[in-house]
Image (tube, rainbow, N blue to C red):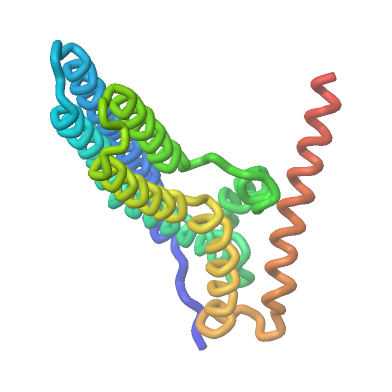
Length: 253
């Protein structure tokens, strides 16, 4: 079978696609932060207004409380599709990165020498210490969602203290449902934007899958051991990072 033609034009196209998706992730993150700040400002303004009302009944407190909770729930609903899209972009970046690494940098049939992805992966703590250390990269969505829940609880508590009938069943039911919905949305957001689930775990699947594809369709040597190649990738990353850290420690003393 004739080997596939992996040209420099294809390489540049893939790199451009990666850069576009990285830019999209940053833009989505900025939009998420902006929406959260706007919602918080609105909810705080409503809370201040309610505290400045000279005489306020339990019914009016509940009304303000519900309005504040809805204002805080809206950015969570806005964060959800943004986080899903961010996770999708992150996984596509991972796929492109693995494709470049296998078909341009590892490919036994390639006459050109490329090394960016291999070098970058060898020094990136996200890739080298896969799931050994927690990573907070791309976690701003989850942190924002948790922050909203904490603010929602604080607002509910402040309104709760002002009520003459603190055992109002309607208020308890509403906040219980709002809290459950908020927690579920936050869990989904945290999972869809997780570095482990969107980058580290798929990296192994994509790399092994592309090596197997290369063996079948791109004239990679038939005797190539997929597991052995994957282990070489892993060992190389650990070795390069370990040597780099060791050298840096000597010159920083």
